[in-house]
Image (tube, rainbow, N blue to C red; front, side):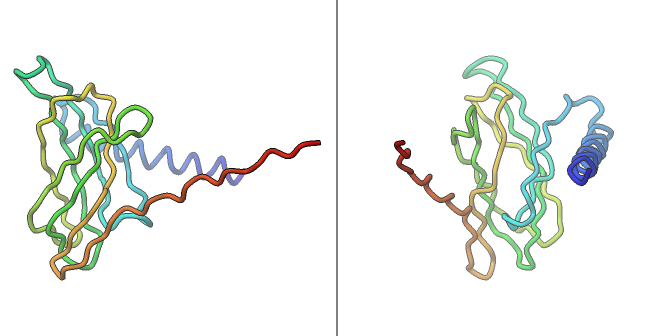
Length: 149
């Protein structure tokens, strides 16, 4: 029962967030929502729009992202990994500026090699005080010998 309540609460939150963005951009295609868990990155991904290229090399695609600095220190640069099929890193985009705590930032980046199926993750955040947050590297899988009977 506890799992059902949690899933319903998460689904309701995602639906409310999607509806809010859809209302603000009625003529834009429905956004893909990808949230960064607040316990990991000091920058929260609020919304991502992936618009695939219409003609390779002539009219590039666009990655539009909105994010919020959750850290108590002003961020000066945020790098995102563009993830493709299988969570493979296809590219890295960096947004530089002054990102104060709590302010939502919205920017667009041109992208040639996208098909609309990508998502983003926060890779690195540089702060005004000189500190840097980098996405932790997951531990390597542990190889176990199969028991013989």
